[in-house]
Image (tube, rainbow, N blue to C red; front, side, top):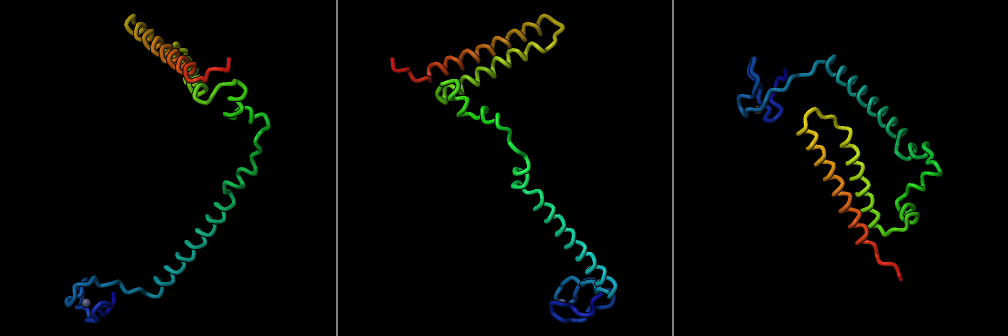
Length: 150
Ligand SMILES: [Zn+2]
């Protein structure tokens, strides 16, 4: 244990944990071996941090992107490419996509299995709602489409 208070310099009473004069906590005196251990641990920690940093720099996003080569055909899936291909304005194309998703939902409802008539009816309602959503979305797509010149 430390002999004198680091804050006010008063000598600690025997066996005390706090300074009787200013109330500061009595710090543990470091033995030589403890200090060496602390230095060792600090060195280990610094080396570990360095290693992690070099590792992270190694797998940075830039290297990652450079390694993965994007296939040539993938550019057909770009939004503007699809837009040009289908020939719809952006809002209509988004509505069209939502409509397709609703149809997919209506089809996926068919995967549910039921045992009772009430459940079966509920599923018919789900399906009808998905199809209504798809219809609304397609209609919105038609309405959002700018009229062609003629
Ligand atoms: Zn003190």
